[in-house]
Image 1 (cartoon, one colour):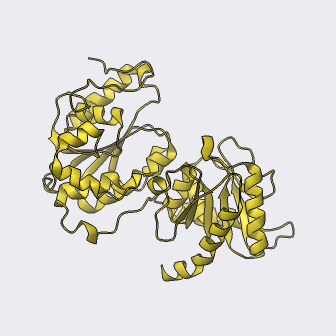
Image 2 (cartoon, helix red, strand yellow):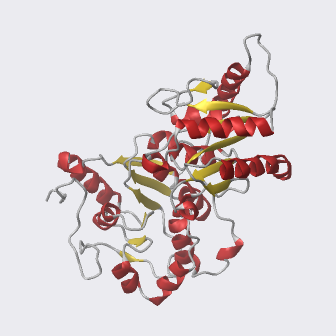
Image 3 (cartoon, rainbow, N blue to C red):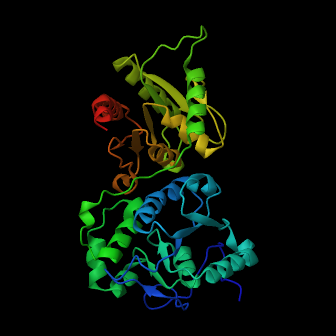
Length: 371
């Protein structure tokens, strides 16, 4: 039977009283009921096309490397850059690519489901709350057992009081929902707080980093071939929808920071459309390759942007990252590394953001020296 799709081409499972589908599959792992022994084939599901949402899967992959070092991991994603993002994760074997419009490619979707069922996964993990497509695929995969954040209120109720207590203690960050659920499935909560939470990560090779160092050196020399020193800040003045701050806002922001610290140097990371949003006033870098972008940002002293996929890419590269949030979702999506920061900003007033960025940059030398 061909998979069911809705008129808007999203996957639609048959509904049950719990709000999720009734396709036959293995059961949800009880709290403390998962054993690392016997888990050799793992399926991770995040069928979303956005760069940021795909990077938010990497903490789970890091956790799987720690908890199941001898297992293989397959990933379901909709992101075209997934192969580049997951390169270097030694356990990742296969990447299943879901199209943005699965209803236009039903036989491709069916072949993917058939391949998943043939793999006979020991464990499947849904990374996100409320993903109907992921929950249907986790069932149709035929995995022996599965772990997932609650799909909806009915799913949370039906999972029972033990899982309800676990979710009530969740960190609250999108990247850590599945990690939190997995740890409690393994341990029942014992010693969970002793383990540091994994960060976003993109594993860059030394040759990629060297190429980025050379590129940055070339960007920073003036017309006389002189590099004037000072800390280098990468700026990405773009985002989607109302997360995007106006070009004029960014220009006032950069000018204010330079007035406070004339030694600061900025480069503009150019968006996918290939046009400078700062009127070409800064040295600019453009690449359609996410690994090259990450490597270039890694050579900078800090990165600042709105809430976007490139912000998560910068965070995954390991560069101290400051996220500027115009929506009330800061705690859910903020960069959370030890030297990262996030601040709510007003598109009509640059002053609070300048103050926050100044404090963020001032704290970097001491923080990095201790790292």
